[in-house]
Image 1 (tube, one colour):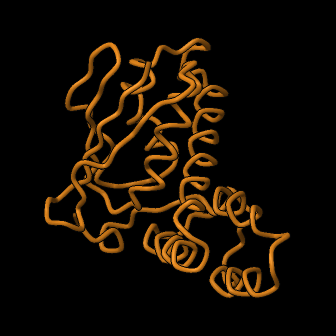
Image 2 (spheres, one colour):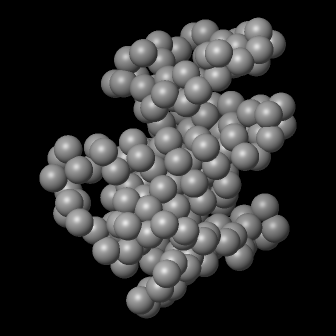
Length: 182
């Protein structure tokens, strides 16, 4: 995968604000550590963009200090935010099918991250209850799973299952996921 800093990929400070808000009633230590990482950013302004690398650093801290379940929660918040944004802009149907939800994942990605190279999820294979997708941008896989599953749930799927089958940290230049639903 490519270094996101060199490519100016950015993330909405407003979305970061939604994520940080999840921790406002936790311990003083967590609040203090998160605030240290964002003091120089106006996260209340949704028009402010932060580097994706900065976001990834915050995510790494959350994973290390609070556990990976928090990353899935972050992904769910991001997926629901993207859904609401796309719905407000009339870019998605009110009643999505699971296949349609998978097929528009590139729009979901573009609503969350501004990337000059337009790197996003790419659908490799899709059928009635199965899909394989890949992503070639540095973005934590557990967060991606949360985003994907929360978006598919909007299509009426109660228990989607998303599995990382290729991890960029293990060698390939992309993450690849297998998604099943019933």
